[in-house]
Length: 136
Image 1 (tube, rainbow, N blue to C red):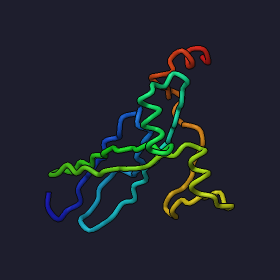
Image 2 (image 1 turned 90 degrees about the vertical axis):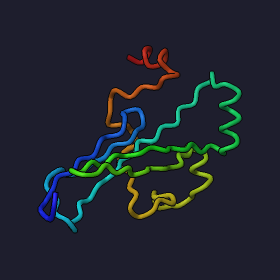
Image 3 (image 1 turned 120 degrees about the horizontal axis):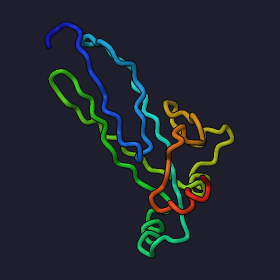
Image 4 (image 1 turned 180 degrees about the horizontal axis):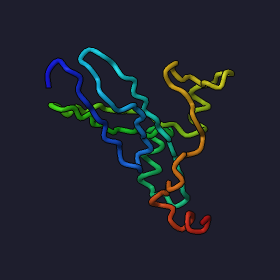
């Protein structure tokens, strides 16, 4: 604690959220900055067994799903919570909302499409355990 360099760490969000924080750990002096990249693997999995209430909620949100998560940044003296909020659109809704020819489709410049498949091979969905067992 003081004017010398100190360490910080970032607690990774739970695996089921699809969020991953990429940063370089190490010493950081006061007034310096370190880039932090937040990766989101957004999944909208629709099943035929959706309840009527879920279908009504989806119709009200027009195919948009809300992500509301917090990332903890832990320093020697403080714990800071950095809120992450996103609206995740289904493929059909995304095409309706953003129609660009340059593959960016309405994304801001700091947002980049890294992959269309999850890097985590252990992804599973609570409502589709039978489907995942059949694919294994």
